[in-house]
Image (cartoon, rainbow, N blue to C red; front, side):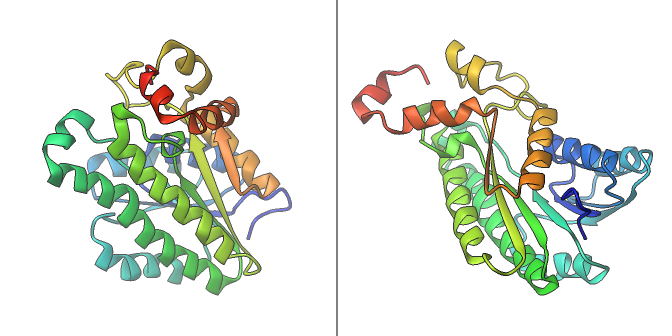
Length: 259
């Protein structure tokens, strides 16, 4: 169960090597979270991250999980919940893809969509059902500001996040009254290993200033959102204003912007 301050005692991270997921786990461990399950494809990196979290004092185990193997989700995730209640599930997996390459290689584009949307939909429904059976818990879904409006430079990724965002909002409505909180997190441009080498290629200088964030900042916002029982969290907060303005621009105007 969560403590009096809304901090979960147990955490399941779907996307066990995600920098945002790990930053959130570290932050919550520092706030009394004691049980962590890192779910991801088996790898040395996953084991290393588990060891690092154990060094912080948590009971950490790894779970073999493949976002694309949706048929396995009920069994794999069901076993996690069978071991004991999970207070919070952080759905943190996803891939950026390579826009130029993926436009010319439809199977690669499909992989982005299947990972970011289909895989997340499957895992999200399984976990929401398990949380509902418990009668409590939070499902935190990492969406993206990119899902607010498709941009030429990353519309394949953006469209997959738009689908995920709509799913999370609808799931949150469906979970009302069940004891399950669904929180959608919309980070801007996250400076991380996944985006290394991109620089500010997806942003102009103004957007870079107002939309850029870090895994640690997202983790901080997630903790605050849990305490407030928020439904939607923007990181940074200014991203909400920027994307609202961009979303309402006429398409001919929007196309001319360097975004």
